[in-house]
Amino acid sequence: MTTSNSTTGDADRAVREELARLRDSIDNIDAAVVHMLAERFKCTQQVGRLKAAHQLPPADPGREARQITRLRALAEDAKLDPAFAEKFLNFIIAEVIRHHERIAEDALGDPTPSADRAAASARGE
Image 1 (spheres, rainbow, N blue to C red):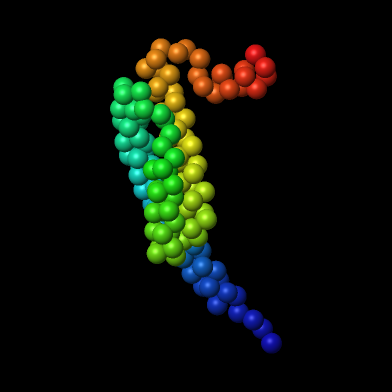
Image 2: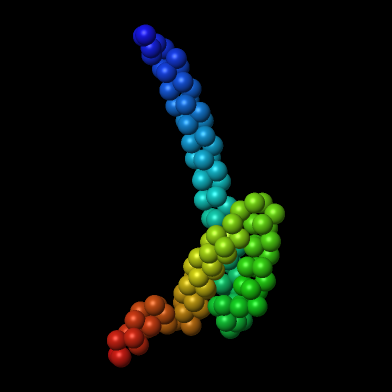
């Protein structure tokens, strides 16, 4: 009995085409996510400048907790793992706080970034 490769070739081609289509969609979504994050960080930079101008702390634990609760609920509604959504938001929040600290330091004219001061403190300097 002989087996024809044409059926396999058609299936392989169809799979490659579907894979390419899905990957194109993923690439488009990734681009949208990057652009949305850029817009978010533009807003958080403005928040950081406002906080610095009024000597407000870089972090707002109450707001962060509310945002995490809100994002977990959104994730559940979207059928996304809420723990993943929380980890993602925590990563973003940490970056925002770092930016706010830098903005506050710049506003005070402190030439030593907080990360450098923390590292020096950890070394006992």
